[in-house]
Length: 331
Image (cartoon, rainbow, N blue to C red):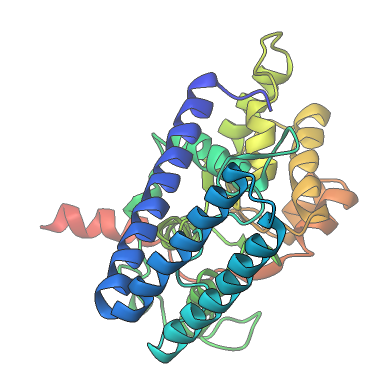
């Protein structure tokens, strides 16, 4: 992982906070049980006493140490059984006072057998995604501000239903996508002219998922490809930062596909990103102003087929941004 060292420091700080929060919760639970279940508190003291007695017997080198230690251990087992009964009778699960770990694999240490744990990679990717999105309009759109009535009720000749109905279905599909999202599965390919709401709904999905704790990267396709191209030709230590982020984040949103410069190199970078995510079933959203013919003329079959393997949403209507601009000049 060739990410900026400050991202690692922030990730370590978040892990430390996670451990601290879990430890505070453990203490709170223990205080709760001792306050509500006096018998459990008494048994806990007895249990501690048996262990202290075992230590005393061993230190004294008593000739009957073996039988005496066994008696104390048997007593210990009996006390633990009574403690379990006290918990269940009090309405608590048996693991209520166990150590608490957000990640059961690494126990919130961030690594397992010398390798970064997946939970640490997720924290790290999220921090780096936040940095990459710092100047993006991620939080400017929501599902609540999307106006279905702004779309015409006239019948679309290609689909045989009104454009408003088409957009109502697109809206429903986007809400469903955000509600069911779990970091795996299908992506969305949004096709339609400018000002029809593709970016708005993409950002509404992003906004929802960020609140749910997923790492989301949004960017215009030309901008992200320029960044990738610059890093590919860089000799610095972080030359793979953006490619790793684009292929590892929970959701990638590529806006304005087709506006990038047309070359074999940019096409290969684009294919690498899309193929890397689809091969691991990591979702993405791609938006384009090009129609199907324009896409087929611009991109090779292998990329075209990857795009259309996602759930395709066709956007129909009038340029809402133009309508807003006209209305604002009349006020």
